[in-house]
Image (cartoon, rainbow, N blue to C red; front, side, top):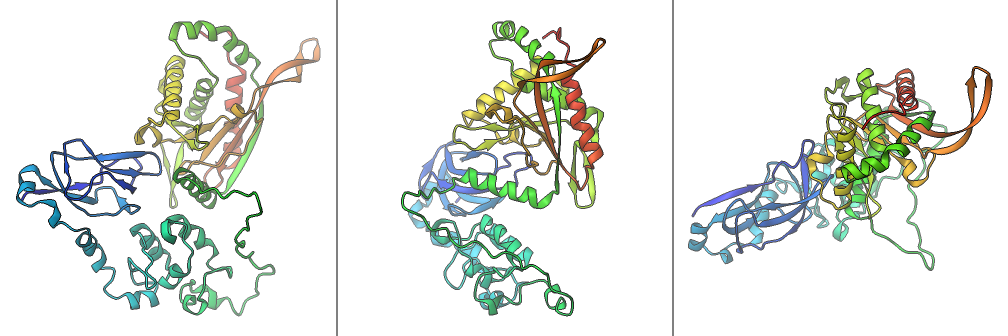
Length: 450
């Protein structure tokens, strides 16, 4: 009988794993080439894995809600010829899970007692732990007793990656789950050694109690994307010491220029020109002049990125956020940037972006002015080290220096907020960078051709 393994395909430059959302085909069901077999979700986009050729789905090697690594087998497909020789009813879901369980279940009692031993796939209480949760628990020295005591937010009370990551910072502050006696082996070695020294003056705050719903309150479950955004934001604040610098820019010339060209541009190109491509052009120019803002951190090393790929945060109709990337922004003229920005924004709202189009960014722009906000303190989009927020453009009285003396005039003003990772970007570079972007926008020639 001929059969082939279906592997989880590579879905983008920085995508290493995906969650199995829903199987679209049952074991024993015939499939055609390119017909979707399973829905998967990454931290960037949702997609489907198609059948590589005609045949029969013999066996599912992973279950719904499992986290699977790129390149890992997820199913066995029998060729059309082989399928007729052995029909699908002979295939049972149970054997598919057996190989994945044998290694983990060899010594469950020992693993529950020792953090250095692998964590079992199924705990003593019957809880299932995904491969990703088990990997994190093993790496962080979390015992089976701790996992069993955690209240999971997943289906059926399953402990998710988010639950475990949220628990890790609380392990030593007295909020660790019960039973306490079983958990004393898990803290790092410095806990006993700290006895002779002075104790902290203020105890760490306890974990908040479960919020009780009052009459009329509504409990809303986070959707998958919101959970991923929450996890990414918490991880960023935990990773990077954030510093934010602010400048106010006089963009009167830029506003007058856009008012002058927007009608002709829309008539000629069939689409509108916004301020976003101009902001991206200014960022790209400033990055060329200060390339150490276009870096990433790897341990104690700094990676200076060659390409200038600028992400632009876009709000979705669902209220969630996605960041499509304008690749090689420094190589595009204003028309090219405008068309690229409009195309990415439109397809983002229609959920038609590919994984590659929302990965690989080296710097991010978020336009908080879209919502009428004058400024913001954006959170860095890891693994980048900086992000800029553009505030709303408003008419304000401003002091102008003229040959005849200072005068007060009505000008179009806006704030730029620059958050950066203080591990590698000092205040001098972070402040100079945002000032340079403001200077480029302030000096925008009112006669610029487009």
